[in-house]
Length: 198
Image (cartoon, rainbow, N blue to C red; front, side):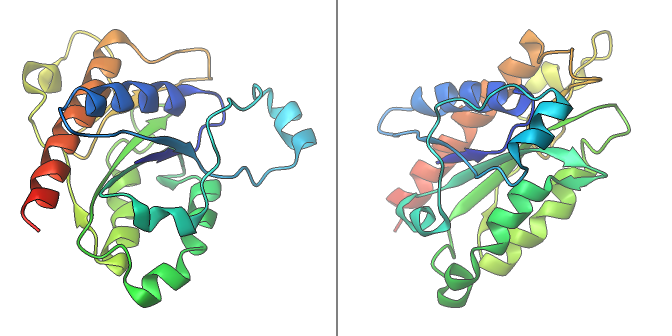
């Protein structure tokens, strides 16, 4: 299951590639969900945010149905956007029952700039997984040479796939989308192995 929040569509583009990567693993069903928006429509209009896509909205009660999760969000000052934090804050009942314990999870993200949180955003988000007893699955350097690209601007890190949005006009590059596809495929393979070992 891949849940995301996207204000301007950057994280959604990564999510769609991650979904394709996961679906490329035999025997894996990939589902894409978005978390609820918390900003009023008039604020979103002032921000110039495009309308939300038709991807279904998830509730916390649907999380236990999945075998694993990749959570995606833009960064806000080095941590996850408030919309996703509000979603996690609504998982208290799942935390109490430890309904997500032992399930693999990871992150993907978007930042405005190189110093905007490509590593701090997932690092500060790990606490959500820890309290639920989930197993954190980073991509490490499994993306190979793409992890060491220095000639082209590329988001992402060993923590997960990422993109740079700049002022919102920059879209995810082919290399960033390839890393997102890789993360989906890599994560799905691990989730499948974990499920098979139970």
